[in-house]
Amino acid sequence: MLDRIRASIPALPPAEQRVAKLLLADPRSFATLPVSELAHRSHVSKPTVVRFCRSVGYDGLADFKLKLAGTVNEGVPFVHRSVDEDDKPGDLIVKVIDNAVAAMLKYRNNAAGHAFEQALAALTAAGQAHKRIEFYGVGNSGIVAQDAQHKFFRLGVNAAAVSDGHVQVMSATMLGPGDCAVVISNSGRSRDLIDTADIARRKGATVIVITASGSPLAQLAQSHHQIVLAADHPEDFDRYSPMVSRLLHLLIIDILTTGVALRLGPGLRPMMQEIKRNLRAKRYAVPLPRADSGSAPD
Image 1 (cartoon, rainbow, N blue to C red):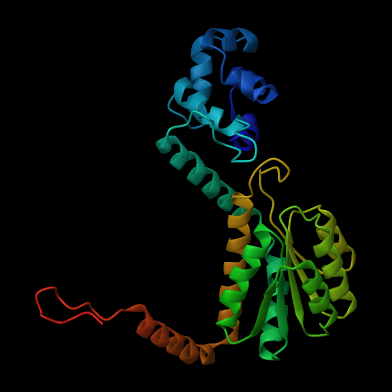
Image 2 (image 1 turned 60 degrees about the vertical axis):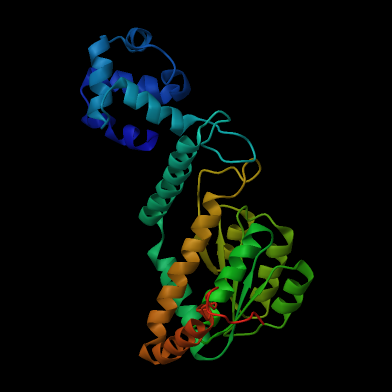
C-alpha cells in the first residue's frame, strides 16, 4: 500500500502531495490522528485530506485508515505480522488471506524469469538423464522439501528429501555432475544448509537455492554462479512464524514441478494417468452394509 502511494505522488496535486509525504513520514501516526490534525500538519484543508484518500483509490478517510492500520501494524510477535490480539475470527480470515495474496502477487511481479529458466533446464536435464534431484531443508523448510519430493517423484525422476543435517552432508557428498541439489531456507542463515550447498557445489552438482535475497546462502550461491530463486517477503524470520514464506516456497516448488512436467513431454502422461487410476482404486471404500440388511459385521 505504501509503495503504491509513494509511486503515485508525482501524479497528485501539490496539496495532496503534502498529505502523502506526511503519511509516508509516519504511517502509524497518520492512521490514528483526526482529520483536523492531519490537515494542520500537512498545511492543507480537511477536504483535501479526504480527496487524497480518494485519489489513491479508497472510499474516504475512514476506509483509508482501516486499510492503513492493517498495513503498518506490527502484529503479535511469533504468530503473524498483520494480526492483533483482539481480532475477531472474521478479521483473522481477511488479514491472513490478504497478507498471503499480497505477498504472492508481489512475488509474481518480481520473480526473476531467467533464474527459473536456469533451474528448469537443470532439473529437466537431471530428470531425463536419470540423475539425482535432492531437496534439502530443516524445520519448516524441511516440510517444503518433503512436498517437493512428493511432487517430483511422480514425474518419474530420482527425487529425495533430506531434513537431517548429518544425512544432508552424506547425501551432498555422494552427488556428482548432472545431479541437482535444491536447498530451501527461509532465513538463508542455517549453517547445516550452507555447508550442504557448498559440498554439493564442490562435488559438481548444480545447486538451486530458494531463500531470501542477500542472505548468506544466496550470497554463497551467487558467488559461485549457482542458481538463486529469491523468495522475499515481509516477515521477520526472527520474530514471526514463517507463514507467508512457506507459502511462497511451496508456490515456487509448484512452478518448478509444472515447468519440468511440461518439458518432460507427452511421454509422462501415461504413467501419471496410471498413478491416478491406481490411487482412485484405493480412494473409494466399499459401502458398509445397511443396518436392516441382516448382514452380520465381520
